Image 1 (spheres, chains in turn cyan, purple):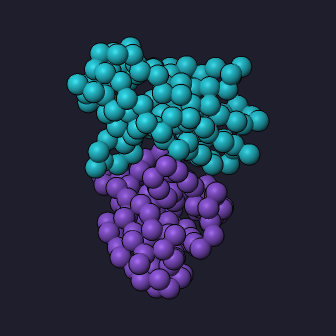
Image 2 (cartoon, helix red, strand yellow; image 1 turned 90 degrees about the vertical axis):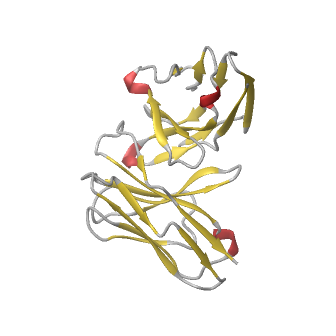
Image 3 (cartoon, helix red, strand yellow; image 1 turned 60 degrees about the horizontal axis):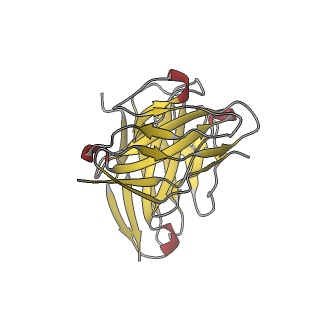
Length: 108
Length: 113
C-alpha cells in the first residue's frame, strides 16, 4: 500500500521567514513524488516534482529515501505563497495518492 | 486547448437522487482520475483509469461508479446520493510515464441535502 502523510494541517509563518512543509511517505518500490499547490479559487497545479530536481518560485524539495521524506522548503516566505499544499506519490499502475494537505499562511 | 474540462461546476441533489459528473480531456493522456476533496482529509482517490478500457478502485469507491467511455472521457456516477458525498470532485489526467504530473479540472462542487 502507498501512503502519504502531511502532519501539519496549518502552518503560519511571517513574511521573510523560512518555510518547511513536511511530507513523509510509505511505499515498497521506488516512488515518484510531487508537490501540488492550490491557490484560493484556483485549480490544483504542479509545483515541483522529485525527478526534475528544480526550484520553482523559490521552493525546493529533496527526496530522502532513508527517512522516506520529501519536505518542501523555501528560505524566505512571501505573502503570495499562502495556499494549500499537497504532497503526492505516484506508485505502480499509475495510482497517485495525496496527503491531507497543509495550509500555508504567510503573515505580513 | 481546454486541457481538462469538468461539468457541471455546481450541483445540488436531494438524498437518493442520481447524477453523472462528466470529465473530458484534450491532452491525449492515457490515465484519468476522480478525486474528492474534503476539509482536513485532502484529496482521496475514488477511481482511476490507467488506460482506455480499464478502471480501478481507489481509496473511497463505495457509492460511485465510473465509465471510461473513450480515451477523452471519464465519467463518475452517483446512483443514490447521500449527504456524505457532499464534496468537491476533481478530475485529473496524466501521461503514460509514472513521473508525469497530474493535470486537474476546475472541480465540481456537489451538495447533497
